[in-house]
Image 1 (tube, rainbow, N blue to C red):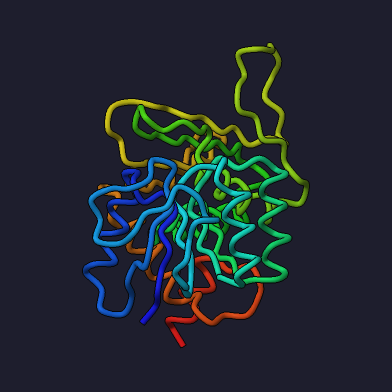
Image 2: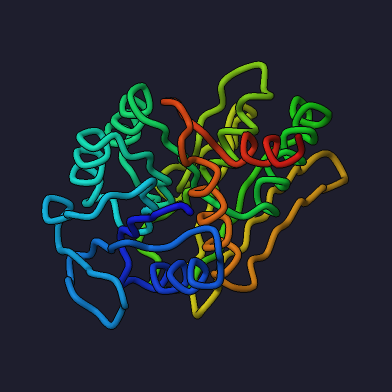
Length: 254
């Protein structure tokens, strides 16, 4: 049995994760952490990590970047592994997560979907074939309540593509402020917000007289919750280090 602390339990994704855990026999939520405090769950909910009295095997975090310091402080102090699914971190916060992974196990991913991680691998393969001759653009679409832009997934895709390019590219988020021709050494990243779009990502390779597009659409939030719960079970008892979806999938295939 994997005992879980759910950070951000009162949010939309928190409720979906709680439902996903309830449907599993190999894990359970022992408590939640959320700035809004108590809710209708059958487990206690605390406003701060400092109030927690329960012991857990792993933390699942679907909250917001402002929670990171408290989460990492608790995780390091109690030697509790953490599955961090929140996006929108600053470079300094991302570095804090990497530093923490030297002392505890951290599963860090901007997207918990199997399909999205396959898209990244396909985009990397396409870059190896097309990257030097094709312009690369990434378009992401999400619901009108999402506050961070671009999405963590779009940045994951861009980072994966960058690994395959001979020269480190420049990420360009907005072209309206300057008038100049697109450089070859850039990846355009564009964010669309509207309606109830769960999540869509297109990777466009635009060449001379042809365009190759790799796409992924998320139909519900359940797939992200399922991925996070699987990651929590996977991370239990792992040694310190940074873990990701590729590692988990490789472990399942053994």
